[in-house]
Image (cartoon, helix red, strand yellow):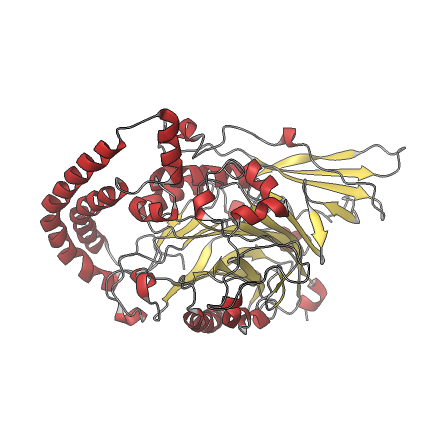
Length: 579
């Protein structure tokens, strides 16, 4: 059964809710502007110095007075709106759902398993810090609506580029081959920060979506044999472009060079990329707290991701959901999928504390329809995203939340499991707010969750693989010249001596000096954004292999996190499937 678009049971309730929110919004906006006019980012301060602008104190003085007066005028209307809005939260489903109708049903299903018994799936996660503008400024990020537009455009630019693969037709290495950047669509990148002027002329949520093409180039090592190029096939998503290899008449190459800059260590191909991976299938975003920003992202992403869950979480007092306090903000989770969402469930963490208790952080679980296998059995996948407790030094709370995540993912899959279907992936991702190098995060690093889910970047508790890069940026340096564009941030992350200046260092235990790194190990920094996958819960005749792990710099200057991507190859053993 398809999910209902509206979070409310009928249009009458939705209408009353809209009226209540319309009374609240002006007061909320005036308060947001009152704080924003008094709080500036380092980028705005540097721009004022360059422009020799000395009128800022007057702007702060008169702006704060005007917005304070408007706030007081709007407050009584907001109170009336609150009396309408708050009780209706009890009958609100904890997410909104947008479905973009495809031009044909085949466009949102995967034919890989049905044709060749194998498929490739791309996942990505990013913390965007799309708080109300006044609160985002405390993280040195402003202009939430502009950033939401720029982020949406950049994601579309990355995931819609051609998926280029180069095959070397030899059992031995013939040298590194890479696709030229000149064949990638460049367009006009969405920029923010030092070059923000290009993007501020239009706040429209419309964006053109280029055809996403898959280019496969076979290069023989024998100089007497001519290279052959497979004609690109236009597709809307990766459901048909990266999983057609191996059919009759296609050559199978023993070595694959996936993209420029790709490296391989510990059997995990990885790269630092200035673009989002091509043909991401499911995207999880965190800290999309602002409703208008969520709507802009939905408008921008919907031509690519036809199924979107946004405004995820509960508001006000919600005892049935187990949330312990009044919630001013939703969970901030945002899920965009190319595949149809069959079932979805949100659970709120009941143990939040301090400022984190103002938001309805929790777990969003979704079951998506992939397609069919060779035996016409339905193929599905499970995708879970979360955002854990943030304050440092409160590992006990995060461990309790990890316990809930482990239980809730199992409960969701048990409740929605069907006998005549194959499960081909089970992925958990999000901002966990702890890393694998800080002594202060010792409890979380040893949690049993990592015995169930595999972390491609983790060698063990307190031990990262040497190629891993931290994902939490130092907020005061977000706009410095080394990191203010995707290309510059990419170069910086690849150089350890520069990376130390811009990635947050590990958190020491209070009272104990920090020694980091130890024993000549590389400097990695805090990696708090995770993509994990579980093999024990998928069908027994499926085999999973990591195709690529990506650290993404395309959102440089737009967020204080580095997005991460993971692509999995899944092979379905058709002989065992028939047993």
